[in-house]
Amino acid sequence: MNLPHVTGPSITLETWLQARLREAPPELADAIRSLVVGVPSDDEEGLVSVALDALETVANGEGTRRSAINLLAADAILTYALEAAAEPGLGGSAARALRLARRIGPRGVIGERFHTRAEAREDAG
Image (tube, rainbow, N blue to C red; front, side, top):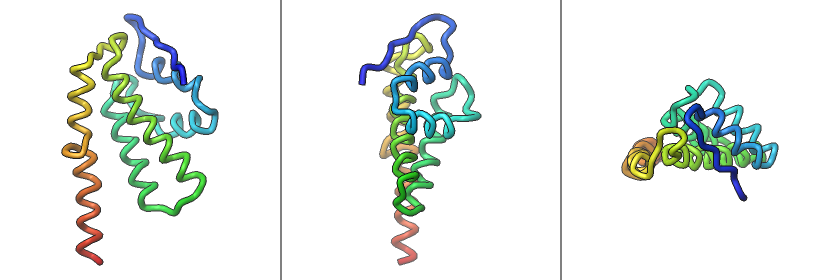
């Protein structure tokens, strides 16, 4: 998918994300929009948080078409958060994206959320 590259001194995360969603399939774009409602317009961490919440919801639910779309949306939001952190037009850089990746990776927030939950299931079973 060829996503538009948007730059400029007055660009916001919301504007940047909306430009990317124009290229996404409509059902996926709608799911992403519904998940990011209320996220501060300059907060990649907020995107990470809603994406991880959606992943948890999917992991705890049944395998339905809606959960598949939400899983794809959560994955896309995590990707967009990393891209936004690297976007110069948003004040980002490769170093900023790397720091975000380290905070959310297997030894970061993702690892904490999902490893703890997996351990709890093992203890209960």
